[in-house]
Length: 237
Image (tube, rainbow, N blue to C red; front, top):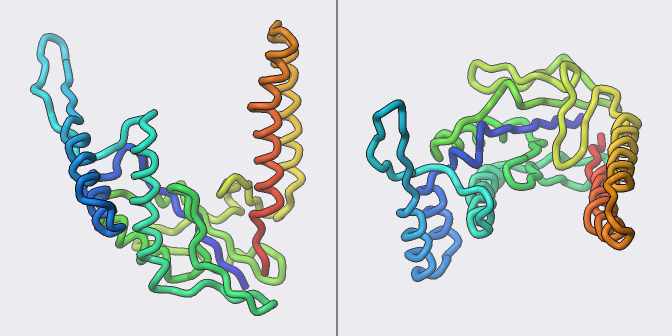
C-alpha cells in the first residue's frame, strides 16, 4: 500500500519570513559577509499605504520575497528545503515490493509530495514554527492498494480532514494525479496546449526566423518538459 500527501502552503512566496531566510543562511554555513550583505538588502524592504487623503508611514517588511529578484528565488528554495529536510530526517519512506525504499518527501520549491504517514504532522509543526500557514483545503491525499485508489483512509491534520483525489484531481511536480491513475487526460491536455500555441505562433504574423526561434525557445521546451513529467513522476504500489 502506498500513501501520498500533496502539501500546499498558503501564499508561500508572500508569507515566508525573512528570519527563516536568515536562519537558513546560518544553518547552511553561508559566509558571514554574504549574510550581512543580504541582511542589508532585506532591511531596505519598506511599504506604505494610501487611503483617501491619508498615507501611512513607511513600514519595514518582515515577510515575503520580491518577484523577479533572482537571488530571492534561490533563498526561498533554500529556506523551504530547510523545512522539508528537517521533517524528512525524522522518518523513512515507503518500501516498494522490489525492496527499494523511497524518500519520504519529494519536492520542487514549495510543492512537496509526502509518502510517509506521520510526516505531514511534523511538517505542519515546522510550518507553524516558521510562521507560515498550511492550506488544508487545497492539499490532497492519495491511498493506493493493489493499483487502485482507496477511500477508507483519510489524512487528518489537527481537526482538518484532507480531501482525496477522488474529490478533485491534484497536480504535483508537473503531473496530474486522477482517481483512475491514467495519463490519457494529461496527454490530451498536452496535445491541445501544444496545438493551441503552435496555431497562435503561426497566426502571429512574425517572420519565419522568429517563428523558428519561438518554437525552439518555448514550444519545444514546454512540450519536452510535459513529456518528462509524464515519464518520471510515477507512483508504484
